[in-house]
Length: 476
Image 1 (cartoon, one colour):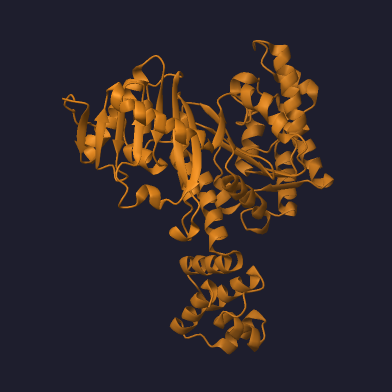
Image 2 (image 1 turned 60 degrees about the horizontal axis):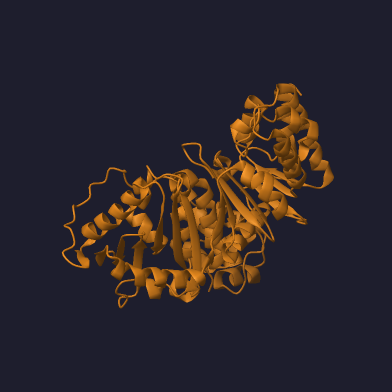
């Protein structure tokens, strides 16, 4: 039996449905319907599932459950839940960027160590000791925090709140264990994607945050026999504690900290970057991106506004690039190189994003201080060029349903060889993350490439009609 057939069988029993009548309504033969009910066959199309839902007169919630069961049966549980979680990641990116608790969370005062170590008992003492390390490192003019802990530990401790006043010279190196044992987790839980979600808030701070990963069974970090699996180290202090954050030690002597530093260096030598991060558009768009995109034949661009760089003439780049930029000529050459490389074969956008561009002359993908808003006639001309791309074979679609709420502060691009995420914090801090871990890269690429077969995108014909109507509305 499949997920779909189990639910269909239950609906037929609970609603006392006559199978013969349902079969005729759906335009199927008797043999095919019984194979669907018994799990020996999957529905051939979404249309069949929708007809079943119509005949049984399902509520919106029941209908959604039947469609979900169909997708699980068609795709498999792992792919279905992975795509669902990436959709949630995108739509909730603004909430992910916020600390989970207020920055003024009270902390218990700790006594000074009487010897080489201060025992910590209970979560309050462990949390107080770790927050103290972070606050003192944040207040220093420069320094480094080394972390050996899972992202969920950082989330539970709300350590982002301790970095509010951190300067740009504070560096955080964080080693994360990613899961490589699928059997140890529920099929509807993607631990590695959740780990990425949990570290997103660190990119809204001013400090330099560098996550690294290695693969292992998560039981090695959350198992009941793991005594002191988490470590937080600075030059002069350290906290080591259990995975449950309930017991540990605060250390502040070189004799005790030195072995922990050696242990961290050994683990660090075996870890790999989870993402590569950039903090400025100059650094990423105009230096790194052309290198990444070289030779890429197919890529997916998901953004709030349409990705219009492909329509820009070099003279327009010169005209609208800010005049007071330092080293403007070098910057201009790099900008032209970026826009030449910024081609895509699939571009998906929000209707609200297109209207925003036409009304403001700006796109959120590029920081506002780098260019002047495009004049209104130029906006309309770019829209005309964009519409023309529909006739060249490029895949241009607008979002619908839940993706219509695509966040204005998020942009992503995915291809077979690279992928990046861009998001903007509430303080207008830009972060660009190149996905380095293969499973995360493949997950975002799979999500982007699967959208064309879902109801989350309008058809090419619907998109063309919307673009033409918008052009007419805005005087084109």
